[in-house]
Amino acid sequence: MSTPTTASRERPLRVLFLNENLGGHATMHRAIKATIAEQPQVVATFVDVPPRGLVRRIAGAGIPPLDRLDLDFAALRSQLAVSFVARRILRELTGAYDLLHVYTQHAALLSAEAIGSTPAIVSTDATGEQVSRLLPYRLPTRWTPLQHRVRAPLEHRVYDSATLVVGKSDWCLNSLRNDYDMPEQKLRRIPFGVVVPPPVPRTPTSSGRPEITFVGTTLARKGGDRLLRVYRDRLAHKADVNLVTREDVPAQPGVHVFRDLAPGDPRLVEILSRTAVLAFPTEMDTFGYAALEAMAMGVPVVGTKLHALPEIVVHGTSGLLVAPDDRELGDALERLLDDEALRARMGEAARRRVVDRFDARNTTAQLVDVIFEAYERYRPYAPTGS
Image (cartoon, rainbow, N blue to C red; front, side):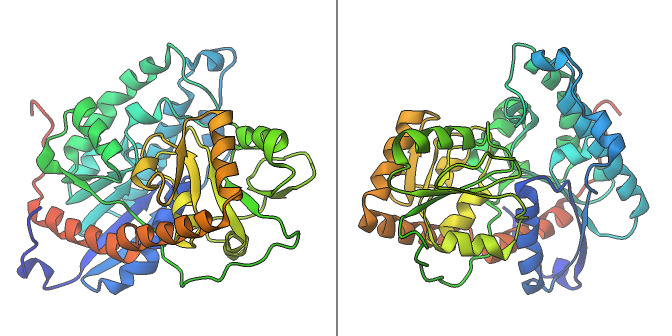
């Protein structure tokens, strides 16, 4: 990475952060907002694509029976609807910024020209090729790659028009290199982190039993259903479970459901302060902010060895990584529930790892360096063949 010159920092750069604001994306941008003030060389404006209204819900709705085959292009239609709104926002803000940061590429599928007309960074946690297999509401089918082939040319134009492309993990960067032929000199890695809270004392549980916590908007592909099966079969006699989810879960002994917690809710801090272990048996998360937030509070994580999670949780040190399998999940949770000293050691290691690698103060500083690098490197976008 080239080092920004002193001249390029003689005045603050006006940076527009355009965020599609889905899931962990909100957590990421909340952390950037909280730490960007420590970087006076940047004046940041944050604009979230508004939540889905009726028109966008219709645009992304499944079409029976094509939805069972993943042949209705619902995900692509939803992404295009987001990008249409994002394009309108960018047009309204033309001239109001010196550099554009877009997260993720799906918010920019219809805005390659706007991205190419200014210094711009496109950041992402996963490529379209990766995301196409990780939808929360359906499993991939033999037709899933067709949707990606239709979307890929639009995604390529976004990456080509950007000055620099940032991946949050090596898992993501490998796809950018291998699936999209992105040149190495255009790629950067920033593991956008979380705000690390002061050390929080562990809080005793009201029942006197250890608590397992799960955080996930949906249950099925986030692993919540698997956790409940394992809990009923193996763990109900020795622990309680906290489910932080939007789904309606039937009442059952030992299971506490929290359906109204939004990202950043202080009640999550209270829940994590008494949590023995975070269960994160997800099959679809590309990065894992729930894991980072728990680790920052000294909570060990049992997660799946999928996607970027092994870059966050060090197996055997800050938690345990398992296959998406009931037996392996149960074995790992039992091991930690039965060994308080092991939980304490892994919890301490988990917090150290977040402080060392995922502290938002440091990752935001890295981003500012990349912002100035992109500002210096910018060349107007010219489509191939022009």
